Length: 359
Length: 204
Ligand SMILES: [Zn+2]
Image 1: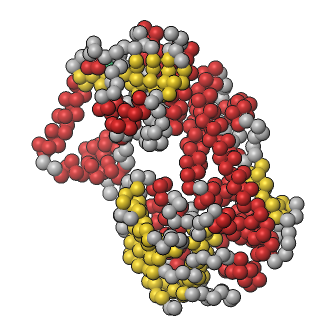
Image 2 (image 1 turned 90 degrees about the vertical axis):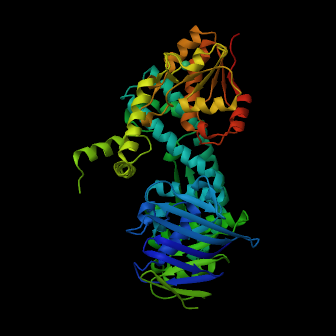
């Protein structure tokens, strides 16, 4: 898959921008705040229906404008071109088109463009709390099987409903509360079991790639593992009934996939608490590379978006990452120079929202 | 900048309407102030007129114009033995368009949604149960929306109705998931009614 062209209107600091991209490695050079990351963030938006930097949609609209537009021409593996367009208005719902045909829900766009994003924040996948790793596995799940997006959104909605119901019970579990909880518990059990199973299956696919990618980036063999630790055993429906008394008292749901954890370890030692900074960085890179490899093995060819990742890496790891990257269209932003060891096919410069092509 | 009291009052009132946020309320308010006085008064009169003439049917809670009971409940040709339960009156309009359904309706006036403060007591479930007890209802078709809250409402109704020995069915899937009944086209909705699934067999 190739992103052939990108058009932006009133997106972040861009009034308008029209950029053509070639295959291979494109290095986008620009100082802080010049808008280089906004370019790949916009492509990432079309792939994931949202900013990979975790920014709310209305913050993506240029100050003073009513709506932002992202339009991209995509070439799929068989040479077919698709025109994808998203309009993000300040008021009202996002409008998304594929080949000038309106798609009903923005979520229907998932899977049309596939990307693998590397960002400096990735270190928090290893060092941060379990919510970040759950988000990693769920994002990866949607990247692998876009239809699983509904599992995640259903889970969020069911939990909000169940928690509101728990709080309305006022701390006591009477017959009425049990009666109505049954309804949401059966929905939570169905979605929760399916989501956990999907995560486990994906983690099974990821594991061999994770070990290989880690060894490559860290340049030594280490037994890096990602283990799924579930908040319940056996049937989720039964576990939910068992936790009701506690849940009503606390006003939150204490078991379910939203309480599960993915534990990362290197040579049997927890990476989060005992890994060195270098080991943690290698693990984070390996997690991104491994998911990318899984999606590629399934026959897709994601575009690699590397957002200023080399500033954080020592030269050895930077070189190892460059070598480990698959042969795919890659858009790499850097603050000053083309990183050593990189052989870009194209170089662009971004200066205060103006883009010039150097080669 | 702050608006005069009457303009602010108009914005506040509009902002209470469903689906209208503060910004839209402002836009609509200024639109109303710009249009000819006659047109604005026509809108006000239409609201007053509708509010005076239209009430909720005392039997099924559908909208009713000119009577305690709605036109469907008053129609002797409608079968009492099949009752179709919907979330809102708009859903009745959608199902009537299919011309597939000859029974009567019951409007819950919402769906089971704790985050919106809607639980068993806010829905017309007690009234539904007394109807099932008193009228000759053989089957209750649950035609709530094909989304999470609609499904939750359906399982809630099943829990209430199953012990009463009435047959309970659910309109078939095939409707766009996550959508609203009122947006489904006639053909799809007709098929969904036709292909309804039995959730509980009745006792007779
Ligand atoms: Zn009626």
